[in-house]
Image 1: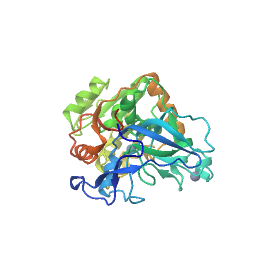
Image 2 (image 1 turned 135 degrees about the vertical axis):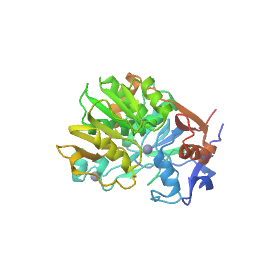
Image 3 (image 1 turned 90 degrees about the vertical axis):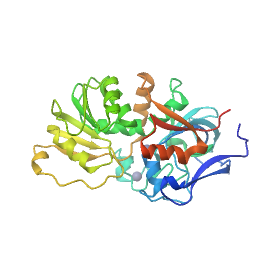
Image 4 (image 1 turned 180 degrees about the vertical axis):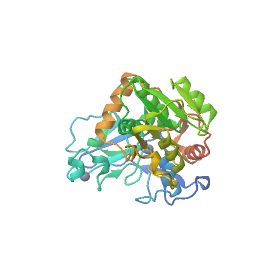
Length: 340
Ligand SMILES: [Zn+2]
Ligand SMILES: [Zn+2]
């Protein structure tokens, strides 16, 4: 068991290709929760592609050094002043949105995900690749007892942002939804879509993923060169490639929307206006709101939503992100900390 004075953390000083091991594994003292904050003893932190993009510098770090990680499950170990609704021992989940201003026009319209002063876990403030993390209590989520520590971690970004993407794709219950790319987030999103009676069509290069999609209830799966058997009411792209956005747009029925679930995308190739004409739409998905997260976590506990995970110790954070990069992780990578 880690001692009470210091615990391991994976710390990014300077971005570099993950093969060069940019994360230093070091001991860090226990932080104190400030006013309005919680101190969380971390049990698990799931990997997200955004962590890799921060470690490699595709997304420039907002502070240095920084501890990455924004799909965090743990228990409350300390409660700062002026915190309501939390006590020591409560199970807690932390996601990507670390704070918003609560005052600007976007926040007031319920679009705190677009707040210009929003901060993000593992980017603007230290995240969950650590034994402890502090977090704004009002941006932390209670977790139902049905949700297991390790299995729940991938819900907190991939699950929640997939849920928002599904909402922004505007597909009605019972409608036809396309998923382009079928990694961790798509594997969670399909479960919500099928629960809502949608017909789901999955497009992915990988034969393994095509088969997994069918096992999870997809009506059809195939590669990018195959023709979909039906026009889609909406689609979500998960692959961080602009060409995939165009492929999804080509598959839409009139009036349909492509929701782009990517914080970082390479250029979108030029396309004929014909494939956008007739009120088809392209919409990027940025972050999530706390309302999205609460709704999704409640649904995830109730269904329940299954996750496939590959558990590794925190000390192997570089290796784990290397495997995420090379595509050799089976399921979502989850770093486990503070094992007894
Ligand atoms: Zn704001
Ligand atoms: Zn993420």
